Image 1 (cartoon, helix red, strand yellow):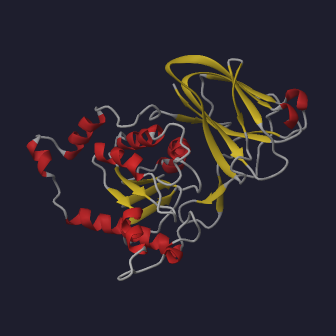
Image 2 (cartoon, helix red, strand yellow; image 1 turned 180 degrees about the horizontal axis):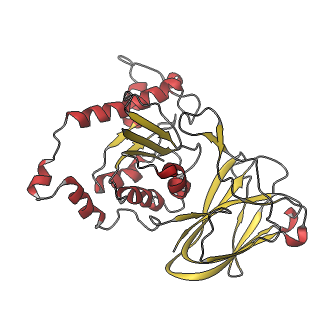
Image 3 (cartoon, rainbow, N blue to C red; image 1 turned 90 degrees about the vertical axis):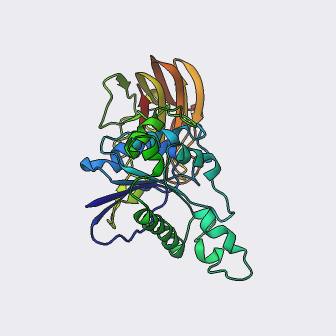
Length: 344
């Protein structure tokens, strides 16, 4: 049975017949910065070993602090799995004809991956005076999201890719010329310098359930568990699955202990916190080894959402103490730490 899994901010319906297990792990409004932290938990859950993984962050990675390092790190992580899954890069598009495929395409070129550009497939024909098959209003539900028709066209584009792959010769000419199998050629490409970066390909998720042995936590009054979380439909289920249910929440009731402290040995650390549009949530200051780094503001996006931010990144592994404390005027507000991502 072929297992197809999608890790992205959108999800499409694919038609391959009955010999496919489709596992949907897309979460709306999320970049690769968060996707790479969710990969092991949400894509490889329950011991799944996908044959094909479709990666799509071409319209949500504009705010990626690493400018593509997280994206390439995720791709490299998937390509290095010991059962050799295939990776397809999918580039969605916004209604203003924009996406990030110029930034992300070199990743696909380096590892010789199949890529599907929805921008290239649909944008040009939107402006045709003759031969136009659909309008932007038909393809898009709003500025950012495809309609049902749009998602069907995206699925058709992926289906076309698989049909073309089915028709091509099984082995490439350059594989014979180099005396390598295609798997051997991929291993050679993975030994090359990443085109953007591979700093986070070994990142791991830490939350209240899965704690890193190299970490010591003082929760302060971040002792509650937030139940109001961004939730998504996983696989073909109609019920919603909450994201990051094993979290630490400060409920605003103990201002004298409105802090969370983590001492951890690693070389890079991400904080995942909850965005919200509610008025009873507040900001928290993030300090590393006593030095202020930034203020985490749940109202920047102003909707129920998971937000991953880079706390620090260094060349060498070292011990650091990270303190997350409610900003002075927000001691009576709520704040939820959904988890952390760390690289040893």
